[in-house]
Amino acid sequence: MKFSRIALAITSVLSYAATVVGSDDAQADQKPIQVDSDFQPTKEKPFNFRIEYIVKGKQVTATSEIIEVLNGDTIALQYQFLNNEEEDCSIIGVGGKLISPVTGELKANITANQIGPLEASNNQTVTFIQNVGVDVPPDTYLLVPAVYIVFQKKFMVLGARNQLIQVEDPKISFFNPKLILSELALGASLIGIIYIVYAMFGKKYLKGILPASRNSIPANEKSKSSAKSTSSSVDSEWLPQTHLKVAARKSRKIK
Image (tube, rainbow, N blue to C red; front, side):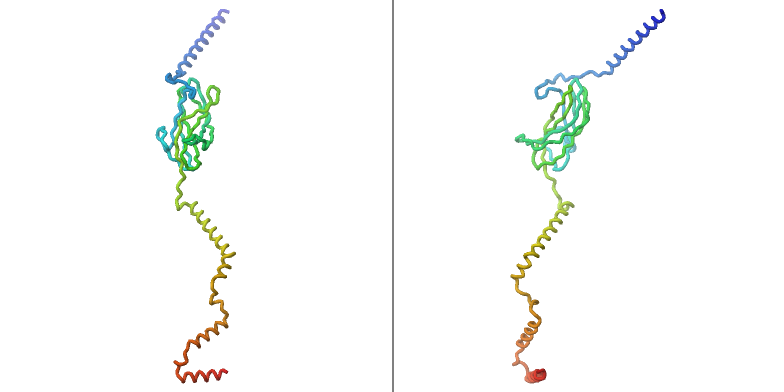
């Protein structure tokens, strides 16, 4: 009986010791929460999240200088998301819009894309990329990106800096295969239209206004006209008398 009590007491002491050691290890492994003491929440920015991005291939550092983009290209926005809040948040998507930098009028929406979800704990920076396809009329636009997160069990839309972009149409080379095929197709179509119009209207019209060709004169008329022209072209006064007599005899014999 005494032995069982002693064993029970030892077991209780060991379990308590293990619990204390485990809690100490957990506290040692847990990182201290860092809070930005300089941050002052406002109505526009109530939470301490920092979002920066660059346009890959066109920027090295985050800047608001205008960048040139060709129509039909896809630009990649590389984000750096820093969570300075005590609680974790989840990044679940990206989107945005293109507006007029002068009037603020909406010109085009950027297709919302789902990402992650990517977990961002306290004082953790998360990197991700948003691909934006450009297919708008050539002009100057203001790119307004948006990052979708879940924080404190609520869906939120966070903004980042705006970026000016100049959209231009790509220059088409004369030797571009697509352009050459288009030119050949257009040329063949024009030739076909011209031929059809000529066959239906032009041929009859030209036949009515052009003078008749010498080839259209009948053969008997040709022989008569050639004989007359031959006889009339020779002056008998210049021929010798012997030749005239021979010619007259031949004509009598033929008769």
